[in-house]
Image 1 (spheres, helix red, strand yellow):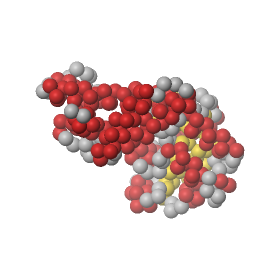
Image 2: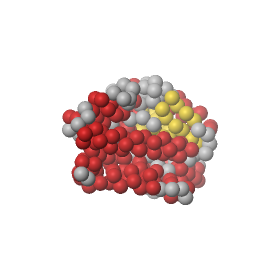
Image 3: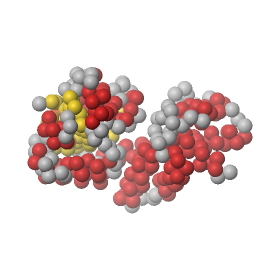
Image 4: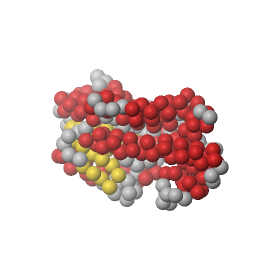
Length: 286
């Protein structure tokens, strides 16, 4: 039996899988696109063709796919439900606390175990000392998963048994980062409108600040390369922030504003482009 199974090989899932393999973990992977899966496991993992084979291969199954709903659809398949007893499901998708509580309750009903995770860095940072990951769920489950968890970053934080904690803190932090991203692009727009060189703008901040990345992409007019996060990903994240605000009954004006700007960028054809492409929204308003 393989120690771990990885489901989902997008940008983040691919990096997590490669990091686990590089750290000596016996990994089985499954992805809807079998070609992508085969490319990932060449260094030392195993690739299977069906979801059932993937679940059967390991006691710990990591989901890094497009949201909690997609995970639910896979787990609730008739041939999968009977396999969940005794297995641990670790979810690594952006969502709300309510979305985390639902699968935990359901997986527990199937006599399985559940652990929620929020990855707080972009894919290139996974496995590095500064990589920060948040986990919440039953402490016993977390402790059992610790051997693989510790290979994914140097700043691992267990937030306790309340399974929604990781999602809540994730969205709180991402709210700040999303706002900074939009404000930075707007600041760049002010500078370029007045003819202020962008290096003078970025020079106001420490080396490595996200303003450098955004300014470089805008100055070169390249948004399909050197991508830190796409507009489409930001729409998903900000939508989750808005859902959380609605669930909590708190003010939604900030996520409404952010979501509107990102959606306008998507309508301009920027869904798969770096967030720096938000500059097109601000330029179009002139």
